Image (cartoon, rainbow over all chains, first blue to last red; front, side):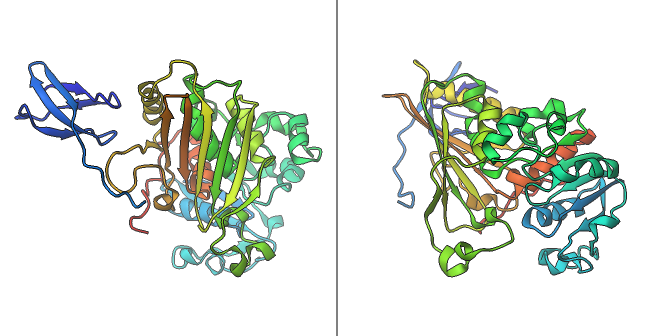
Length: 56
Length: 344
């Protein structure tokens, strides 16, 4: 199991077994989308998120 | 079982406390007093407790000794009777404001009158577990907390503890508050046609709860502004301050994460998805959680720190039960597990 650090909030995130490069995961603390960019060692980068209407 | 009684149980704080104690696995409620409702079933005042208890309101003069005595009277009464209460309760938790401030002169400054039992001020531990957990383990007397003070103190807690804000700059805390803060006794301003749908700033500065923020956070340049909004339960504190030079959003994440990890009822709500992305009192009704969030303008160091609570729970009776748990050496969360409702 590999761990990565969220570049937005620095939460430690465990990658699930079978995670692939290019997969989008979600930070459980701040909710950003993260793209897995490598596996050994594991790295992620912020992925573009679609802007939502948030009741404004 | 640990025996407990409530003095002054006809108000909202007393009713909420009774609700929590009736479901607490280690506590048996012996008596609930009320002069005005003496002899009536408590569920006739607190209708959510129908079929949960057959207790009737007792005469305060008939109170029997118990392990823990809760005081839920209006402010100003407990300090006149504390010697008598100390004979009835081995341990005392006071929900009112009588014993929140440590210093006699400071009390007089903020409450505009001399304290009737100043020797007792130093005997009480301030009743916010997030600040005084260790002292509570050996305490016999614990004070209440102001609901607005609690929301303010918890909004500032991660920032002050990690020494991230400039204390020479003003700290402005805007509070939006629900109508139950006003208590169970109404007045012309709380009459439904007048109170419904309001956004009414009823205290621009100088609110008494400010004293608790000054005392507990060690800040002096702080101002609280209270605005009544169309809620029954809930407080949202929005604190504005300046961070110290070089503080980044990631530093703030670390500080807030420490607060959430050290305190079972503090949660961080700073989300990029979903509907509830920031702290919101609406979904905390009946729960003891305090939801914290923040945003930093890194261009000028302006931080906005938010804290949402249920004023009757984390801001009063929930914290009182949490204090009892700590004072008795029980699990801090016992009887306080309800997570709130959604939707509501």
